[in-house]
Amino acid sequence: MNVALDTLSLLPEVFVLGGAIVALLAGSFLPRNRQVATRWIAIWALMASVVAAAAGMMQPSTTIFEASFAVDIGSGFGRIIIALATIFVIVLGIEELSGTRRESETYALLLLAALGAMLLSGANDLLILVTGYLLTSIPLYALIGMSRSPHAAEAAMKTYLLGALLGIMMMLGVTVLFGVGGGTSYRQLGPALLGAPAAAVAVGVVAVLGGLMFKAGGVPGHFWIPDATQAAGTAVAAFLTTIPKVGALIAAYRLLDIIPASIDWPLLVGLLAAASMTLGNLAAFWQDDVRRLLGWSTVSQVGYLLLPVAVAGRSDLALPSLLLYLAGYAATNLTAFAVVAALPTRRAITDYRGAASSHPWLAGALVVSLLGLVGTPPTIVFVGKLTTLAAAWDGGLVWLVVIAVINSVASLFYYLRWLAPMFFHTPALSYPTATLSPVAAAARARRRWAAHSAITGAVFVLVLGVVAGGILSIAGSPLVH
Image (tube, rainbow, N blue to C red; front, side):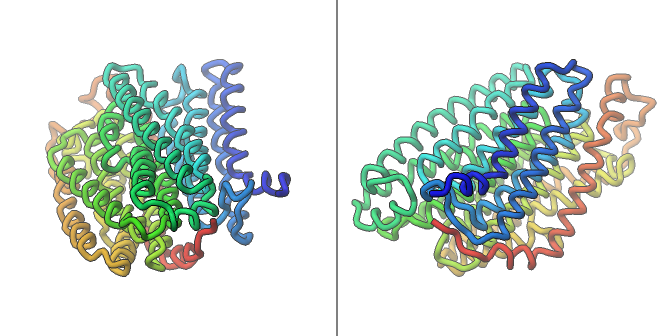
């Protein structure tokens, strides 16, 4: 093992960790009206991480630190998506976070949670998997409760209790797999589990997947998502519904890729996918709060993202379709949250009545993002969803493809419930500035950065849809163990 070279391969994570530490220390000495410096520290650290990750993807795939961490196409895509998405979150939350008492701490926690997601995406050892889980989870508890409202405190407590429970379950699964496999490295576990008792392997896999489903926001670890999305700040809600998913789903794919066929894990993941997409859609049908609707929407999206995970190693399309869908989902979901952040006084679906006339560009961005989440061409999620369905079909899970198609069509209903009122002009509800209270008028006027983020995000959703074929070709390399 060459420690210097291995450390160099971890430059994307080193930049993020360094950015978090420097932002936290700088924030401790800067006055409240000068905290903008910590924002730029965080953004520059994340940009450096993107550059380092892109450079790493140009090198041959390898494992580092005794094969405990993989530097390959999966971790490369994960690093880039996570870093760019975190930058987007920081920018859309500029007005919301600027000048607050915990501004620098928020940026530091966002970077630490992003670092944990990066570790998850490259984890090639069960101990690294647990480390990434904890590093992603602990900052989220603080971020959710930072709003200091009763609902935020309740959501933070619910997230903490569920995270602790499923974290313990994950560690139990790691212990079982270590016991029957004789090690924690995936390189060692792959051959060792072939001759291990199937029941013990099944218990270990179910327990570890339970923890990863908490991070991804899928069944059975989904209960915290809607409450946290509704109660947390908009930037935090955008972060928690996007970034942890990227790391958790790549980690699940990487783990299942080495699990032997002695247990029917594709059926297990298929059932989790069907339950997530169906429950998320059914719960979203009747939501009036737009943030809670997006919370349940993200639960349903986990179901679609689990399709390629269910056929890991059984279809050549599985990994590239997962990585493409993750990139598309991140851009699309964050665009929807940017619109919500840009219009902070509009919390309910009915509040968006007349928004197409008063905010035409934001209305267009919302149309692109919500129809993108359905999987409407020419958005990138359309290509992502199409390729994940093809991967699942190719892997023999035809029944799951049928359920996914039905759920995709059904999801159109609650997205249209949000979009339709925007095009009904009612003067009394169109919120002209003259009729707003000073506080509400100031809140609308201050969200310029969020509005620009929403429009930029919508453009990226469409552009990525056009270049999706190129992304698929890049993501076609196999994982290393």
